[in-house]
Image (cartoon, rainbow, N blue to C red; front, side, top):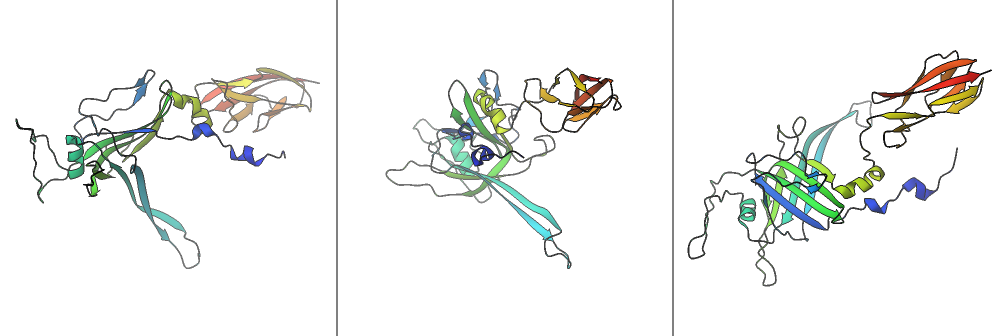
Length: 300
């Protein structure tokens, strides 16, 4: 067995160190605007449907996406360790602090619909809160920016349904903006995702293509190619087949091999072909529904 270095085992890759050097929080009242299926296309970011608004610049001091899960263990008298673990609760929370005095930010912070709040001719607006105010639900998109302007990397979180879980205090310091700390809790939306979900987590941008393979997100396989396409081996000799996808990326696991005539040539699970008797056999490789072949000629 070949030895490897600790560095090669670790596979450190600085290109995968993503830093959200800028952030945007976008919101719309729950159910009033569609949530986009994609945030980007081949040319860059796609404009959001009407109804989505931005929170503007947010403070760099407090922006977090967090969550928590709770489990219960089931144990038996004869087992010192749990026999089964059941998830009983899972939560997700988005926390950030606004810097700009916008109607959207006031609505988020106070969990109140201000669509009927207008400014008068004297430059004054006012709204009232009461204990009878209804809870407002929101759809939220948090998107970050890293990489370059030409090839950006855009990590993002989409929460289909959120509401204010708790509010912090508005700072009134002389050297501090009237920032509003907002803490939103996520709720599952049965119409979001394949079968209902409370958050979608993704990363987009042309710069993401540059690091996708290193991060383990190779494009989907649409075809496979076996190398070599033809081979010749002597009886009892071996040759090894390799399999790659349509972009020549090696496929090293999950491939199954079969021989059309094992009396002439056999093939192992690793693609090693062994000559058995003079003649020919077609070796077929199969992966995720795609196949390709190698015709093997066995010589005496």
